[in-house]
Amino acid sequence: MPTRRRLIASALATPFLATRLPAAATPLKVRDLYQRRGDGLSDLARDSVGQRLVVEGFMAPPLKADSHFFVLTKMPMAVCPFCETEAEWPDDIVAVYAKRVVDVVPFNVKIVTRGVLELGAYKDPETGFLSLVRLADASYD
Image (cartoon, rainbow, N blue to C red; front, side, top):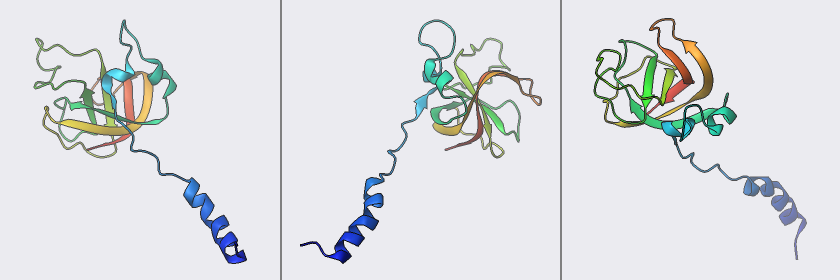
């Protein structure tokens, strides 16, 4: 038979039992932010503006030292695409504006970034880099 003490303990414990920890977020891929066919952004990207996303990819060689900015690509790129005219710059990239000065990661090591998604044309005042897709207030590992 339930006692008063057990009923109270159950009532107090119920909110904690019902609250589940969120599952670990599966990182999006850079390509998930773009349409599979044709040009343009995916519905996922348009619906996620202003939300903190987790996106995996590769850090392209930085444009300059001691920067808070880098470019996330879907595949490893060994050379700076702005420095080598022969290099093919991918259409689906994400500009990442980090919270701190970027520690360069080797180009062939996959990283996971977390940041607030921003869409629309933006020209970086320091580098002149034009981006249409950005992660702001970002961190990476």
